Image (cartoon, rainbow, N blue to C red; front, side):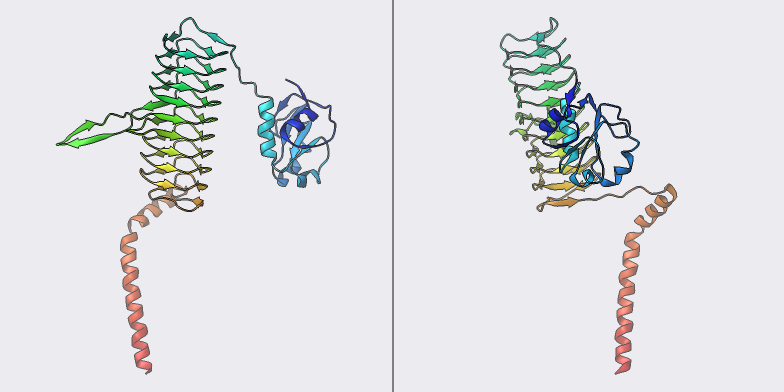
Amino acid sequence: MQKTLQDIAQSIGAELKGEPQLVITAVSPLDTAEKNHISFINDPKYIAKIESSSASALIVTPEVAEKTSGNLLIMADPYLGFARAAQIFDSTPKPHANVSASASIDEAAKIGENVYIGPNVTIEAGVSIGDDCIIESGVYIGQNSNIGSNTRIYPNAVLYHGVTLGKDCIIHANVVIGSDGFGYAHDKGQWVKIPQVGGVVIGDEVEIGAHTAIDRGALENTSIGKGVKLDNHIHVAHNVTIGDYTAIAGCTAIAGSAKIGKYCTIAGRVSILGHLTICDKAHITATTFVNKSITKPGAYSSGTTHQDNKDWQKSAIRFRQLDTMWRKMKQLEKELLQLKQDRETDNE
């Protein structure tokens, strides 16, 4: 694909400084860019790398533009510009509309126009698939599920019965949506299964990474809001609610009935206990253990960072001694207070 620098500037909303008709063929990192590639600089500290780069054009901030020359696209957020430019040159293959002969589609299913359905796909009764969807090989879609238009489901994803998926969504390989929530009652040493009769409702423009699992609700629906982005290997338990435009990184686990607000960012390997509420615009750093509700926007952290192994072993021993050390400290405080009181008495 080829685009002129002027075309790209208009598409990403940047001011152009340089040759408008310069042909750009790819978006690349600054270090590996070649002739006719465009790259970006988000921080002035990387200006020194420009001289050694072969990039023909750069997306930069106004501050960087004042300190360099050449073919520049100038905007407040070059990283956003890079994202938009990358969309222009996106080379992800898209199959043409077709229904594979090996696909199993129930007569009671409704398939929209310009839809691709790959080999060995199974679509059960009552399913509705919107226009311009791509359903890749090995996908299973259970009864009475609804797939919005222009949604892409990658190979071997499984949507159980009663799943609603919005338009413009991306579901990556081996995602499971609508499996039973972990619900059991205890009876004299045995577990009695609680049927999970709710569904899963997923909004428009949601992307779900590979191997992520989203459980169906016990009685009500598990709900994923508009524009939510879920990384790989995330577990979303039954009756969880995730607000619009929240982004969650890989290996995070969210226990049942937790409610997460809008515009939150949750980093990797975070654990969130069930029945908690996290307010809008909360930002939770990696490996944090959330054991109580968060009511104020801001950044939250817990956990420990890595150390040299020998130092960590020493720290672990001291950690186990914290209670004893605390008791000794309290005793020393009492003794110190008594000494001060005795001295004051002597001075009188």
